[in-house]
Image: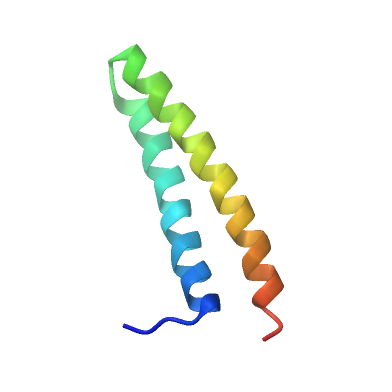
Length: 63
């Protein structure tokens, strides 16, 4: 599979957004407080990645 830069960014943006949703959902459904806290941190970290990937996607949108 040959992806150009724009395609790579878009794919990873979608992956990061899915990770945010998954970790948020898991953090709310687990009964283990430590795991819930860690999943919440993972969601926030994935959110930061998604924001940066969105910035890059916006840069390539004009191509």
